[in-house]
Amino acid sequence: MSTRLSASSRADGLAKRRPARRRFTTRGWLGSSTSWWGLAAVLAASSFVAAQTPSAPIDADILLVNGHVLDGSGSPAAAGSVAIRGDRIVAVGQFTPGQIGKSIDCTGLVIAPGFIDLHNHSDESILAEETRTAENYIRQGCTTLVTGNCGGGAADVEKYLGAIELHGAGTNIAHLIPHGATRALVLGRRAVDPTPEELAKLQSLVDQGMKAGAWGMATGLIYIPGAYAKIDELAALTEVVGRHGGIYASHIRSEDSGLLDAVAEAIEIGRRAKTPVHISHLKASGQPYWGTVRGAARLIEQARAAGQVVTADQYPYIASSTSLEAMLLPDWAREGGREETVKRLSDPQALARLQPALAQALAERPHIRIVAYKADPKYSGRVLQEIAAEQNRPAADVVLEILRNDSPSAINFGMSEDDVRFVMQQPWVATASDGSVKLPSAELGHPRSFGTFPRKIGHYAVREKVIPIEQAVRSATALPAEILGLTERGRLQAGCFADIVVFNPEEIIDRATFDQPFEPPAGIKHVFVNGQAAIADGTPTRSLSGRALRHRPAGL
Image: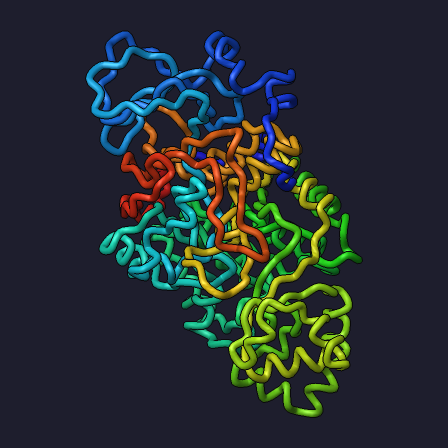
């Protein structure tokens, strides 16, 4: 069976933002105030659980030598080297090198497994010639992206993974069956329950997707048409996923007033289907609901204590981003797609019904920034409420004007820093960006596509010490691998695939901001994907050595 987290498995969590650049120590990591450069003697003497100590010299194509090895397990760093031959790791720790093709000095650097982004939206952009190198993720140290999230993406799993295999990609790609896209094939975008025949068809499509190599099914229960799926439908489809050893990943039905009910629903779906549950980007959005993540965590802990496998992921920011429609309009107003939505926004009866819900949504989201608005570019990058104040108009009127003309993305600065820190400290929370492969543009989008992983390690772990660095690394490596069921990635062990990142712990930090969202991070020195260099001495190689990862019940 696939390696999977038990309810009692160890994991980790996370941590905050960049001060003026300074020399820092590792207090809170090794438990004393010791500079990185003074660790050599300590590390050399430490026991390295994952180390291989073969008696014969090790031949390798690439030798990463004299680094601080964080193997992904959550154990402290140890002095050692990592040997790569072909696409595999052949030795880790202290060993005698044999014939070496290329040696890379990693003195003062951390050697870690490549990062795994459990929640990514690169379904289309990873297939495009100009973006398939996934440079903005390679620059973060990511070597595997998981697509199909929030119910969107390629419903034809075989065709999608086949395209990755044909054209190549900068990172590995694992795919989840997108529930919304699959539902649309059978039921369109209607707010209806499936008939028994339609449910059987949906189950057949899920079965086909799992057989083609999907790692589970993902729902987006605030998006159309996924929002119209009730628990019986979701449990019936998840049961098919579970028979194949997959997971149920969910953008749950509410992340504000209904957060606790939404978490309980996800847990109940997993319980009925006897399938692991994974909650995407766990958060409480809107100041009235700050702190409810603690109640959500209690529900998850109770389920885990009862024997269920329940996990979550998080991006380390206080702002979220999605379409303005999904952010502010209720499900019924979006039924049938964009054309039907626009009609309702000009219908007096529909508007009368909509106004109270829209007013409440805006009251709970007082700081919404428009990413890009084609109909009137001067709105792009502006805060919605500031636009309304300048024009002496109600914010709801500005929203209706915008949505009649376009469906822009928006950023909602709606989360609490305390909540962000609390969530990342939970042992079952992995790191995930909720971003996508993209090129820099004029849009002032969310910086998570360029900064998530260095931010969590550099800002929250190293500088703010919300969690130890070894836990921050595990939350981006072994933990997501265990959640998904990847058995030969996410760890630095002999025999595992050579997905590796090398970074400077004193330099690693995100540089992308909400005003400059496309700045690459600092501190990432080398990245290897399946043994091939994707970043060499800080420079992208434009390698396409990533692979389509097809799930099988026994693992990779």
